[in-house]
Image (cartoon, rainbow, N blue to C red; front, side, top):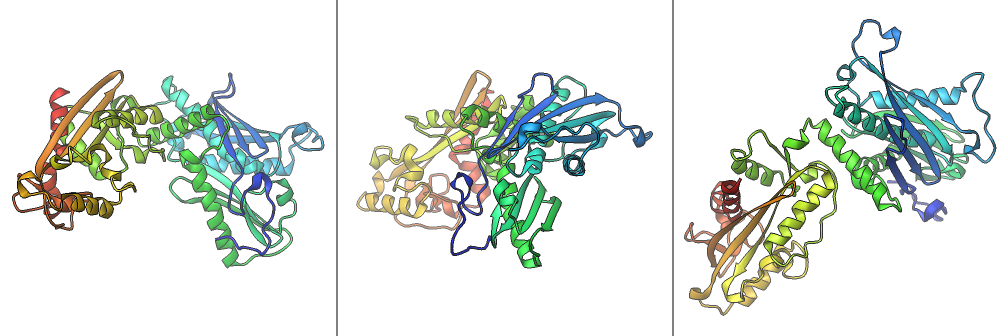
Length: 465
């Protein structure tokens, strides 16, 4: 954690010591480039353009591997004083930065699968306010992905040869305070200046750290790296890749990073069903039932493709809520097929309540104890003969313009006391008709899946495929 001081510094955009500037990454901003991105970190703006050319440098000899490199330049009016163009020789700083960008991109690129092509990413700083190299790396990866993705779709290369994503951020110590993402006034007065490049597998690509006006110890180095990793994580998460005033721009970059993950995972979009859940066990259950009806199709959890917001479930019934979630998964990922379900407990003596409000019946979403307390209280004086109930599930598959649904129930009764340590929700109070004397929470996962409402809904859907 960053050190706190008695007086916190005033930072651009009113941010805290551990907060980045607003970041926007807008892809495909150039007509003629194979891939491009405008990277904006606060008032720093870098235009990144990727070009794919046949052939590789001669020094690579007979190797059939491709090559990825970068060039970096600062336009004359990028700073408050005009910077002369580098006609007669490259500045050492420019060469150092472009080599860093190239190394960072190659760290997540499988050059063997690129083939005999060279990709050059040009990073031109059009406005500088600190962190130009980190903005260049982050934007260059987006431009690189866009170029490789387009080349793959056109048949120039067989697959997108990326093994992950890469991003970069700066950290430093200014007047004794550890800061994330330094702007120019902070960078120019930094006691310690540091840059971190990280990949989506959580590993470090490169660390650059310099004691400008003061030295630093291992303990402070660790804190600065932790601070930088926080910034890297924010950049690599699709939802955090922009706080743009333009919703369209943010949506485009989220789609870009999501499709990159699809490519990296080796998924064929036409044969992939995204399941609107972050629960891998639910994906396994769905795949086991639907794989025969949908052969050669892979099922992947939405949570594996990005950090997406939960859609507002304001439907009038289970079907409408499931449809909202499935359509949101299609819109967020760009995949043509998605599946979602909506489930709940329906109690006869309560006129079908809690129904679609099952998860938030007591007020707080997902508070199982509060929900069961309310159910016990309302059912306290209900005789056994009138304690009938069922779990209901509706599963919806969106496939292009087609919408298919499956419905299933698990009949039972509401018990007088909670029993069992398995399951969740209302399972400790629900006594399935198929397992007399046992609550749903007393069943093994296998026993529960064999009689569950979702199981029946998925079987119903499978019959319609």
